[in-house]
Image 1 (cartoon, rainbow, N blue to C red):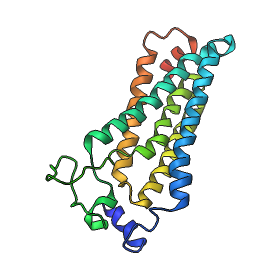
Image 2: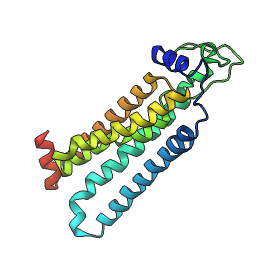
Image 3: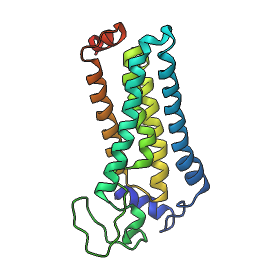
Length: 206
């Protein structure tokens, strides 16, 4: 809330950037579209690996990447509907109509719940921290690049939403944590009883 207070004050005591074309059309809509296209591209590569023997060693890492990204975004979306937390712009202290509610605080009857926690938009970026584990399996020297891609994309999308009043920083941190631990768990499970050389070597290097 300390950060949200500063952003709100800097924008003149209202969410001046809430309907910004750059933040809504380019980052919000475009970010989701780019993430979806990237996932479809990985899906296409996974299918190709079934037919091209030269891609056989990539089959398992590609499938793990697909599953990690899909699971992370689905889990964040599910939690948003279960927690029913407000966005900053919903709170009366930021020009909204609701009192400020904490995560576990009961809502009085008649107050419509929102769905802003964790941050769904930044999950389109943070889910790709799974690239760290993909590269750990196929090219360990690039794994930090994969991590930087996921964190960088999540930061851009997350900050854009914070500037609009759609999320608190804590929402994005939770999304990053969920994405990381989902990817870690799926990666670890995928390496159990692994038979192909790349997966086995990656496991030993870690």
